[in-house]
Length: 184
Image (cartoon, rainbow, N blue to C red; front, side, top):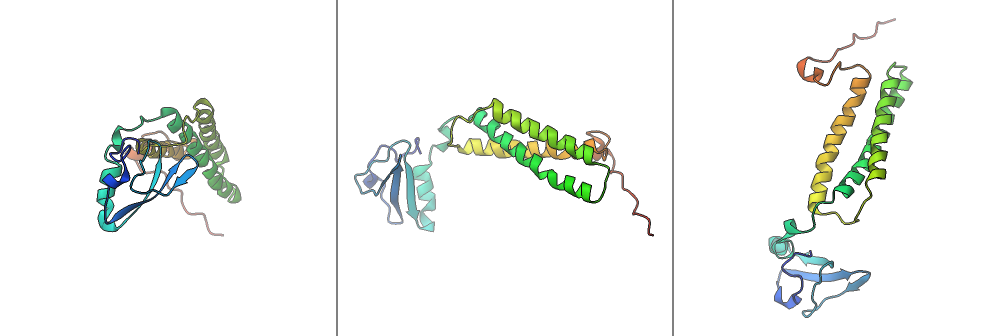
């Protein structure tokens, strides 16, 4: 909102029959605005608009969002650490199923869980989160790198259990298919 066209100007300049500023949150204070109220940098603005006015509101309030704050690499890496911890936790379910069915792949799952959790902890400890506010670009980066991380760490159980012989095996040949168990 800091780079918006409506910051630093009285609200009466931005008048619309289809949209209204209902409240402004400035720090811990909630302001019910009138025409003379001026939106300041850092304000959180609640706008009520009809569907037909959404484009107008976006244009007025977010016209320069891409020139806002720069991406925060330490915040992104810190949050990726939490994503990796979540991935490590989600690998506990296949380990449980492996244990229930008596499969011989527990070591591969444990190695995968340990390496994923260790990478998550290292990212959390090495990169402190600098800001609680995330920009659009931070969000895009977290999602993109989160998917890359999930893909990489999600394939580790296949490699550690011997399902695939190498990184390129899945692309070059189909995986080994085990025969069905013999009937008793």
